[in-house]
Length: 78
Image (cartoon, rainbow, N blue to C red; front, side, top):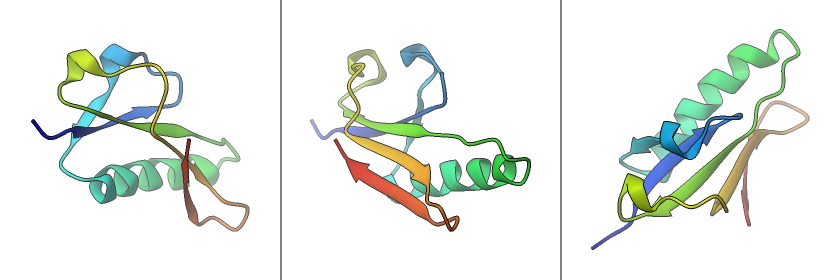
């Protein structure tokens, strides 16, 4: 079974992860939210988790998302 993509934003718990159809769609959802908060000087980070189901998402992320110093989306492997 193929892994699905789960987005965990800020201090969300593992039960609060959101499933997305692709890395791109999850990253764009995060970017919109992070840019909204950046206007008020509030930084936001998120993580992507790859798992077969929501029940199998683990604490350690597969990717970390943030906005760079000039506002661009950063996706870093862990």
